[in-house]
Image (cartoon, rainbow, N blue to C red; front, side, top):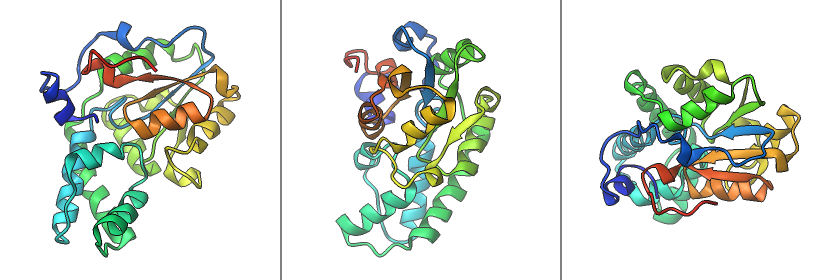
Amino acid sequence: MTGPAARRAFGYTGPVMTNLVSLVAPPEPYEALIFDCDGTLADTMPSHYQAWLAALHAQNADLDEAFFYSMAGWPSADIIRRLNREFGYALDVDATHHDKESRYVQTLVSALEITAVADIARANSGRVPMAVASGGIRPVVLQTLEAVGLRSLFEIVVAAEDVARGKPAPDMFLLAAEKMGVAPAGCVVYEDGDPGVQAAKAAGMRVVDVRVLWQPALAAH
């Protein structure tokens, strides 16, 4: 689990603004870097959770915080289908997705980067190919990157609508590697959720789990 609940458990309650770049330095050698967006480059997962709560409460539905973070990286449509399946809701996928994303976008004015990870991206810009691979839809991912000042670093952005299967399937990362012209084994992925870590490993890539920034005891993957 990531997000505020996990951070509180480890004695950290503020946004992730640490400059401990050494904790998330990419393992050498590497030919390309792939970054998740929310919770990895941008400290936006709490905002996503609040947007989900508001959208679901409007329909007399709910979402447990730990359950939400266990699905970090999932496309929103898949989250809604899982809620319907496991809790007996009858949520309209398109309408609920639209409502949630609309509520989230309103929070972007106060979005912050995760500095340690953003610094890695800035240091490698122009040195190796880089991409963003996010379970979010493209317009929202691009708005998030713009909001935290990182959009110009990434020519390649893979979003939910670009693949048939989202995380934890490897499709998103494999497509990013293909677009960069780099073999999967040469890529290092930055992630903050178990589905994304699983997807990167399934793609044959090495992973830096950025949760080490607020969970010091987290073992390297």
